[in-house]
Length: 361
Image (cartoon, rainbow, N blue to C red; front, side):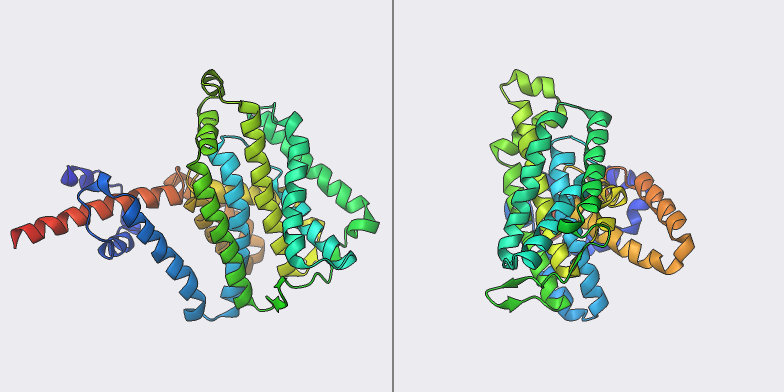
């Protein structure tokens, strides 16, 4: 069975076969592919956590730290959208608006009312979630492309309101002078401190999401994604389930927006347009819908891709488009999903091989 599966490997699998094989060498033995479950994968997550903690200390370049800070913020936003897009099966092109609501809430509360950034952080999530609840009642009755257009319209309405309410939001200029994020007097004023802040928040939200999708509510969301009619037939309140996941997704965007405002020290409407919503959707799709690691991987990949292509100026958009097309062709299920499948296979294969070798000794 193993030899037959090896022959079925496609050529593109060999590009990441070697690093995955190296990863499999540090994983404990398993009886077979399908028995490799919770204990070993918890250890795998500890390896990932160790990499996140040690990486900025090994690679001390400030530019690298700043890129990882942005990637972490985008990953929080993509993780929330993944709950709505990947697990609930709904489409949203307006998450940049919730991101902007979080950023402007923090900007207004900290600069106009001198509220501590920690409180503004939570207020931003609550404000974004409240906005999602208000618009979710009517628009979540729509499905498919109609829902996507409705969320797109909400995003455009948000931009118009921000530009026209100059006394509150600063209009097209925006709000400047937003203080650094601080906790009990400790200010996150350097890229290294911001790195640990952002990725610490991301880790907390990731663990929350992981427990959420395994809960009764998470199973109901998956049922709605598969078939709303079938979900109704087993007693699931489809409307309430979609509203709950939409509100939760918006709260994640509010958290990300608040952190973005504190890191960049500004909130400007140009950062929250349709292009940004599309970028976040691409992060979820490229990373892999239906798994929580995918959006994080997609956020890191596209953040670095945009940074590299920025050097080519007028050629950046064509190159960016070609790369995205190639990624979608070679990784139709998402990079995170594909790597996860191959990692599971290789771990099982090398664990079985090691046990067979030990049996021959």
